[in-house]
Image (cartoon, rainbow, N blue to C red; front, side):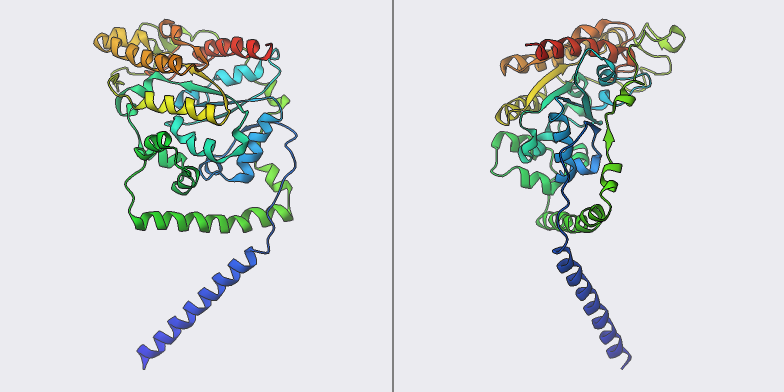
Length: 369
């Protein structure tokens, strides 16, 4: 009898849970989608999770805010992360001779392929002005090859599958090598998780913002004039007491702690770049690439045998840009300038300032055509 009682109890609990879920689902259909007016200012950046899931409420608003204000979107990997005394986009935003703002998305391993689904699935990407930083260091070590962990960090599997239909074979070839071999169960699990997340949005997003619209705007990061006024206007070379000029790295950085071994024989980064260029042309993205420097001085002093290889990596990227007739800003001459690098792959604020000057010249020329 006890066993029968337990089964009845479990059945009742299960029935209550199913009824609650059904009620939750039906009720969500009654919640209208929250819409916002056209952006009255330009956003500085967007939260990682909203971009990963391509949440239309946030991604649309973010991209529209840039386009509506004649702004630029800066994309980059870890070299584009904030620097203590400013990075190149900070100096661009602080420059009053440029009558436009520069929004930013960056992160370690956020290479071109992580933006393919966004380009393919969001109409607001058309006509957007983009600056994309190409770091030759991503042709070194394990960075020279596809990376499943980085891709999963920035792109949800459900968004990837949704965006890549109809399949663009060239894009799909790049994306597939970044995707772990998923079982049918994993695909179903990911799709269900995505569906539940969209259902949850009806409550924590649409319902909440309908009740208190200001909550949506409070979550945004704006590029305001008062913020721009506090940005650095310039940056001097690092102080000798805090910098190792012999090796062109920060005083606290040990060049032997790790080394980025170049892989010029790997074609993946060039294939990824070529696909990015063609995809942007197909979707009318006005993109200019920044071909970044490499730490020539450190390679020459510590690993002179590897210097020709990193130069070849950089040259391979240049050849792709030239072959595809892509607009690019050449910053490779900064490779030999002392004070530019903080370590093997990341530039200092001074390096960011020198990069800013080159981008500024390009933007001024483009805006005055």
